[in-house]
Structure formats: C-alpha cells, structure tokens
Amino acid sequence: MPDYTIQAGDCLLNLAHDHGLRWESVWNHPNNSQLKARRGDPNILLPGDLLFIPEKRLKEHQKATDQTHKFVRLGTPAKVRLRLLDFERRPRCNVRYAANVDGNRSEGASDGNGMIEFVAPPNAREVHLILTENGRQEEHRLQLGHMDPLDTISGVQRRLANLGYHCGGEDGELGDATRAALRAFQRERQLPESGEPDDATRSALHQLHGS
Image (tube, rainbow, N blue to C red):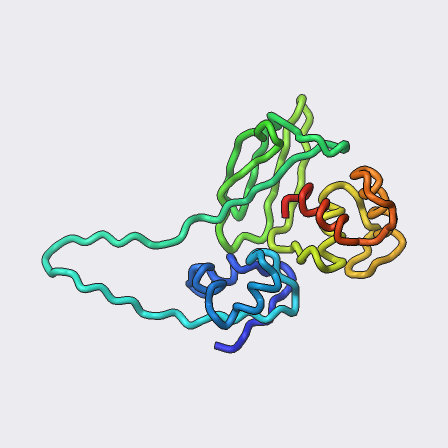
C-alpha cells in the first residue's frame, strides 16, 4: 500500500480503525520509524506527513473440531480526555457534563483537577459537550484530531486558543494577533514577553495544555 498523506483532522487511531488495523501495528512498523521519531505522539500529526499503512495479514489458529472456542478481538475503545479550566486557568471541579460522540452519550462530573474522560468510537470526529455548573449550561462542539504538532505555528495557535488566548483567526502564520496572544501567555507564566514561540514558551504550553 502506498504512503498515505495526512489530512487535516486525521490521527493515527481513526486511520488504523478505518483500515481494520490496530494503531500500534501501524505506528511501530519499521517504515514509520522516521515519522515516529519526528512526531513522538501518534495522535498529533501534521497535514502533509506521510504515513505507511501496512496490509492486513491473515492470522490462523489451529483448534480442535466439535468444540466451542472463544476468540477475543484485540483493541480497546478510544478515550477522550479533557481538562476544564476557568478564565484564570484554575481547574473547574465537580462540573456536570453530558458528552455526545456520534450518538454515544456519556455523563459524569469533572474531578478535582478539572479532568473528564469518556469513551468514543475510534473514528469519531466531533464531540458535542454540554456543561452544567451552578445552574448554568454551556454548549461546546469540539473537533477531534485537529491538533498540529507543537513545533509548528498552527500547533502553538491551537493550544493558545484552547487555553483562552485567541489568535484572531490566524492559522499557520505568526501575525500580530498571535504575537499578542503569546505575550499574554508569557506574562501569565512569568516568561520573557518576546511574542515569539521560543523553547521555554513551547514547554510551558505543553505542560499547561497537556499535549
């Protein structure tokens, strides 16, 4: 099978699922060793990356006839993990949530660190999330698989936006709005306010964003 060119919204989990493979079988294939070393995280790929997707292999088992045999399909459901923060970047604890992912509904509450977690189909593309806190509701639609690597400008911008530092619609270009968002983030994290996505800023973004 020829290399697949990553598109916006792709991640390894949904691509492997669409081809009937486990994501580990794809990610750990020798033909993907350079991509694995460059990106590190199988679910944060950049549009234009080349991913080798191997052919499925037939697996045979020798079993006695006239008996009942049980086979367990490998693989686990995908999980979505989100952290809820307030405008001061403090965890929002005990917030009730209802999540709908392709018709799969989950309900619960955020933990003491603002984290929520729920199961989603491996090929899911969007989460419809409703939060309830102090009698007030918020509705959010979150795209899955649209996080670019942190060493790209678009990856920096999307993490800033997720943390509440909006970049004015700039995407992939380091413009005035993105520099202003970077300076605001750097100020809050007590970093030099350069407006540049330097190593210290990227490290702080990774730590706070969680990816």
